[in-house]
Image (cartoon, rainbow, N blue to C red):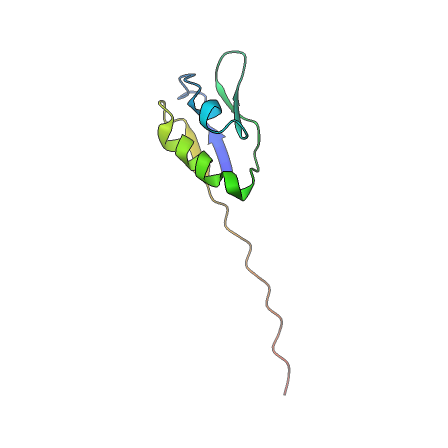
Length: 77
């Protein structure tokens, strides 16, 4: 999961830090910042909730594609 905050869109509402404090915080100007760029899987729902709650629509989340699994070659017969 890749989390980004667009500082040009952030309105310093604090919603991110309020609803997912394990992932977000606010800087000295009140702007949202990502404190935990690699949150645990159990925080995914809270992060996604913040995305739609953000009044400035400044937060985006991108699921990273898992690397293709390597498969073992089939045995020769």
